[in-house]
Amino acid sequence: MLMLLLVIITLYPFLYVLAVSLNDPFDAVKGGITIFPRKFSWVNYKEIVSYPNILHATMITVLRTVIGTITSVLSTAMVAYVLSRKDFLARKIVTALFIITMYVDGGMVPNYLLIRSLGLMNNFWVYILPGMISAFNIILIRSFIDEIPDDVEESAMIDGANDLLIFFRIILPLCLPVLATVTLFSAVGNWNSWFDTYLYCGGNEKLSTLQYELQKILSNASASSTLDYYSNLDPNRTMRVTPQSLRMAMTVIVTLPIVCVYPFVQKYFIKGMTLGAVKS
Amino acid sequence: MILPFLVWLIIFRYIPLWGWIMAFQDYKIGKPIFQQEWVWFKNFIDMFQDPEFYKVMKNTIAMSLMGLFFGFPLPIILAILINEVKNNVYKRVVQTISYLPHFVSWVIVASLISSMLSPDGVMNMILKNLHIIKEPILFLGEPKYFWWVVTFSDIWKELGWNSIIFLAAITSINPELYEAATVDGAGRLKKIWHITIPGIMPTVVLILIMTIGNIINIGFEKQFLLRTAAVRDVSDVLDLYILQYGIGTFRFSFGTAAGLFKSVISLTLLFTANWISKKTTGYRVV
Image (spheres, rainbow over the protein chains, first blue to last red):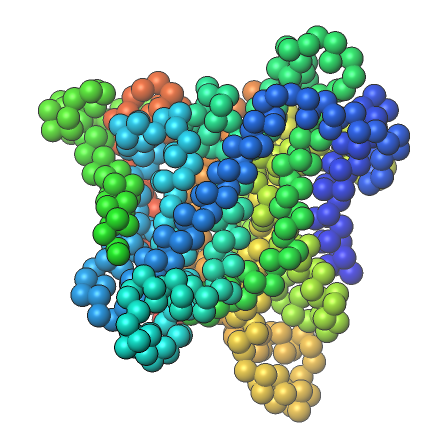
């Protein structure tokens, strides 16, 4: 009973937003929509897709998610592998150096100045480089690699495989469950982030992301200014949608990929999380 | 093989630590860090004399404590409840749905919350139909509600997710203990009280220590995204203060000092909680 309530409380906002976004904007103003659209219409989505900025932002978001996730998972796994090798002399100290970063970081201002001095302001790579390696994920992957018997590596080495070959051909395939978890975390993180866009590329439309576009719509608190912002290209547009309906449609667009992918990867991350929790 | 990653580590994680020196200087852009003017503790003194600072500290601590008080026990209760469900399909569905909000961004959550709490949103509708209120409440427009909105948005988003770790702890309890209890005639509640709860205690203490260590790192996303002009006074938190002064007005040294202050507090809290826990319960994190 209690849990049914929890399910309803969790799902209701999503369904409500979906319903409003699919409803005729001016009909929606009357209120009373619950989880089904009353007057079905695609107009909100047509409206959003017709803004050139949105398509570009989608492209940037997808590009960032794909490149960011691949580089992050590969490099984190590589570091985890090196740190798992007992013949790596500086193993303890390098591990410690990575772990420390979980507890202390320079803070917002030094990071900002660093990004500035590296020339990463208004640069696509600011989405990829700073978050490339995660100490937490290193621990997760490493504890998985430690489970792999050393014999597997040794026999490969006798067969003449070098470190890189062992990593790509043996370690990576054996780590698939934990890599799936880390990939999910990293992809979601990339897809969801908006603050780096705000802080480092705020004025640059060429690097805007979907989350940032949604944030802009939200932060224009007064209703009319939202519409002004999105209708300054063509004043006639104001006639067809309302700020509320536009916001809902945008919310759905940004949420949809996550809701679609999530059920399929669920079983992996639960396994991965449980593993990490029991180990550490 | 690891060399490029070490370079990365030094650049992106250790150079910013080096930047802490700025907190004791009057940093001006364009000069190397050792040719900057040293002012020692002036930035900290300025900060402690700024009434604005006490306001943001009050907001930060208030929202953190509310989050701890309401947000900490709920995931434990949820994990115990989920564990009691015997129907596997139902269990799965509940879990899947309760984890979902964790995976959407705060931007989306802010959008959902603000539509739920709007004057014609579902919250006002329910309250009206129950005849608790006559006029719709402007939840996001009134300072007295803001802390509650933030706290419960956070619970809505993370409740299911935070329960995972406790569920994992429950599953690792030895099933024989339950069997023995059944033989002794213990009911469901007795089993929860005498086996489940003591069984997950180490995990509970561990998570509590880490939560306390993070109490000042409440973040700024929810506050930044949920606030409106009307609630500015109660929504500004330490990180927003740093953002606003440190970067917004180019007082880099001042912002760094505030950030350093935050790090020191959070490490102190972490070690204190850890030490107390070690003395009293024997569990520790670091």
